[in-house]
Image (cartoon, rainbow, N blue to C red; front, side, top):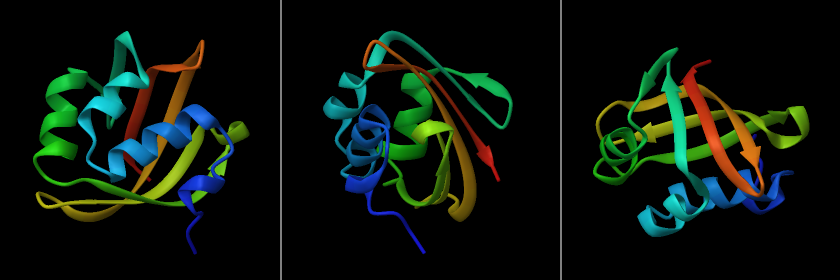
Length: 107
């Protein structure tokens, strides 16, 4: 069972998932702080390069299964044209209404 994106608890995380699923690069970067950081399976990555490779050019999409920590932690079925579908976890740090860091990896 998935949680509809418009029902996610944290409005900033909701904006991130909405933009990601729409493949809307401008909207996704608008929800990130200028110096936002991220990690994938515990390794820090360049945010812009990672999003370009894992989301925009490969049509990434999240179906959220559950949320915790007031909506700042998600478990989602993530799929893209490169890797197919996998169960992933996402943890967000929100600072002043924008995401300053997100961490993702296999759940």
